[in-house]
Structure formats: C-alpha cells, structure tokens
Amino acid sequence: MRSTTLVAALCSAGLLLVACTQSTTGAAGRGGPDPTQLSRFYEQKLSWGPCADFATSESDRPTFSDPKFDCARLEVPLDYAAPDGPTAQLAILRQRATGQRIGSLLVNPGGPGSSGASAAASLSGRIGQGQLSQRFDLVGFDPRGVGASTPTIDCLDDAEWEAERADLDVDPSPAGVEQTESENRQYAQRCAQRSGGDPVLANVGTRDVVRDVDILRAALGDQKLSYLGYSYGTRIGSAYAEAFPQNVRALVLDGALDPTQTTADRTVKQNAGFQQAFDAYAADCAKRPDCPLGTDPAKATAAFQALTRPLIDAPARAENGTRTLSYPDAVTGTIQALYLSQLWPALSRGLSLLASGDGTILLRLADLYNGRGADGHYGNDIEAFVVISCVDEERITDRAQQADLIRRANEAAPFRDDGRGVVAALDPCAFWPVPPTSQPHVPQVQGLPPTLIISTTGDPATPYQAGVDLAKALNGSLLTYEGTQHTVALQGVPCVDDAVTKYLIDGTLPPPGTVCRAS
Image 1 (tube, rainbow, N blue to C red):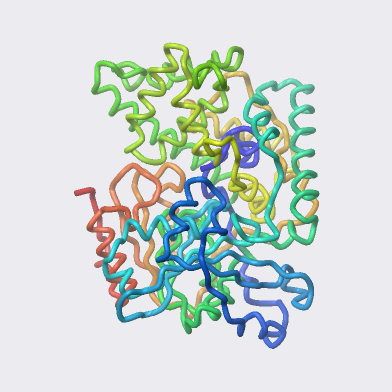
Image 2 (cartoon, rainbow, N blue to C red):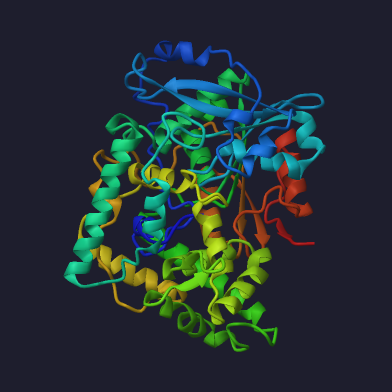
C-alpha cells in the first residue's frame, strides 16, 4: 500500500512495502509520567455523534453516512513526557453490538498510516450480522497523525505528489545521488514544517500509539483489550502486549512482522516475498495463451522488464492522454495487484494494455496504492507511513550500507530492478530532525494470555516466517493459511474466520499445527 520513489527510498531498496516498520521498544508503558498524571485522559467520556465529518476520502463518505456508525474524538497527550502540555485528538468510529455484548473489538489495518476508522467500516460489511457484530462493539481508530486525527501529518500537496510520482531517481552517478538526497532532505523538511514540527514528529511512532490504545480501551469502558491487527497493526498489538500485558483479553495478529528483525533484513525478505508473488502470478498467467508475459514462467521477469523499462525514457499515455504512466507507477501498480490474487486478472489486462501503449489500468492500480482519489486529491496514508517509519525504523546514514542493501533487494526482486544500477542515495529518514523511538528486540510479555497469530504461506509483504517468529516471541498459537495474498482474517475463508471468531468470543484457540486452505 505504499509508493516506489521516495517512499521506496524509505524502505532503502527502491520499493516501499506495506508494514515496512520496526519493533517498538519495551518502554511503551514504562518510564512515562506517573499514572495519576494521565487520569484525566483515562477517565474521559467520549461524545458520540454522526460520522460524516470524519470521512477523509471519496470512498469513505457514503459509508460513514450510514447511521449504524457513530464517531467520537479521543484526547491524548501529544507528548507523554509532558501530559499537561498540548494534546492530540484521535478519530474513533464504532458500530455497536447488536446482542449480548462482550466488549469492544479494536481494529487496525496496518500501514503504518492507514485509517482504522475506514477499516472498521469496511470490516462491518464483511462480518454482517454474524456473531462478532452481535457480541462486540466494532471500533476503529485513526492513529495519531493519520486520517481524521489531529494534528494531521502532511508533507506534500496534490501537485507535489504528481511531481514526485513522475520523478525517476534512477541515476546512480554522484550527481544523481546528490539530486535524490536533496529531494529526500527537502521532503523531511516539508514534513516537519507542515505537520507541526518536532513535537509531532518525535511522538508519532508506535511507542506512543500503544499508550493511546490503552487510554482508548479505558474510555470505551473495557477492562481488557480485544484487538485485531493486520500487517503493521500486528506491531501495535505486540508492542501493546509488551507494555500492558495485564490489560490484554485477546489479540489476533494477522500478517505479522518479526519484532527482532533488522530493517535491512526485513526489507530484503519483503522484496523476496514480492518476487515470490510475482512468480506465482506469472505461473498462473502462463496457463493462458494471451498472457502478456508469455507462456514460459521462467522468462516472465525478463518479459516484465522489457515491457516496463522503456517507460523510464518514454512514459505511456493513460486515461485518453490526460495523464501518463511513469516507470515507478508501472512497478507500483504491479505491486498493488500482487497483494491479492484476485487482482491478477486486472494486472494481466494492465500489462496487455501497456504493450499497446496505454498505461491506464496500471496507473489506476498505482492510484489505489498511493491513495489518489478520482478527484485527484491524495490522502495522507503515504505521508503518515514515511513520518511514522522514520521514528520506528533503524536509520542508514552510510551510503556504502545503503548501496549494499539496494543491491541485495534488487537481487531478491529482479522484476522491479530498473537496470540502471544502484542509486546509493540516503533516504528521507537519514535527514529526520528527531531521533528514533524504537529498536528491534525480543518482546518481554510475562503474564500475557494466549494470542492467535495468523500467517499466510505466500504473503508478499509480510513473509510467512515472520508470523512463525512472532508466535514464538509471544508464546502464541500459530494458524497457517496456504495462499498468495496479504492477510486473510475475516475475508471469507471459513476455516480462518471460524477460528478467529471462536477465539475472540470464548478464547478457544485452534489445535496446534492447524492449516487452513481456500474452500
């Protein structure tokens, strides 16, 4: 769900992937203010009302107008070290339980930077009138800086976004590196200037989000937290488990990140995951005589390169000539389609259309990834991803290390290698004005109740082994799903959905070694 130019530079390898995030430290609930200093936040009463004004995208507006949802704002300290100082306001969306209520089920869709309010509204449609909607208030929140929460992260206006997407950053010469670093330095400066300065940037990471989650738990009237986190949302869940294990009722973590993994190693593994998904798509496509990459899967990567690399010098026309498809957008659109096998037919149509000189379908897939609406307005998902990641991630400030990482990433995912050589430019985080607040480590979760971790064998963005490792770190139960997609819980696979529902309602975990498959 993230971009491939400066956004990709952020993941240090020419590809910005969903859940490119790092484990938080164990200090989320420790070393902060005395609990009595936070009592006014924990004891606040939420004022619920219509949700229409909480929608931040065209697609959300009709959904948020549904009267079954109500919304509120949660007040939290901007800086937990100064709880009497400025505050942030978090956007909360709720669908109330229709039956015998257990409590709230808090949902986060990942990113970082994705709207939890939007995710909860979408999830409502998937779970319908089933047991979860009967027994739980379904609650989504926009983390600090994200979506409708304030202060809101802002780095680029719409015109700057369009320029950024057209910027190639493929020149490996010293001049090319200098130009790219200048752009990344400017990006960091814009984020600081437009988002509220250092006080916002320093306190927007996962360390602080988990503290917000505990205040939200109390404000919702729940003694214990029930939580469903996807992708980066698993990082919020595992960090909360470390900070507040005594406050956990149930955690479902789907599409996990290994909390002990370094930024560099995870980036390489994610690139390998997307190459695996590309190869799976190519093998499926090759069964059809009209496959735009040919009928030999072994030659698909070369065919894709031959189709997309010319865009570096000559972008393709798109949308009846009103827009153009750049090389970065062609790769981004492809990545968007690799998240879910149901999008493979759209990818095939997009690549076939590109072969005839029309980049419209790939451009629209890239728009979806980048959060561009039909009106040309961009949401702040990507900008929030950058800002949050820059305080969650390890930083690379040595160009030789950066070059080695990009080389390894290109080798892991040759389908998205532009063929122009390694551009060893430092990414925006290297120029960030505040220090990181997290580091990789093994979580300390004494007293944590049983948790459920779900991992998909062909997940491109959060490879399967990371779920295995997170389950081990949390001493949790692992549920394996055999498929090619990013996350699966409550998405229509009965074996998975039944296991999640039973666990959330009565704590029953699936038998050890359970493997689910699409029906």
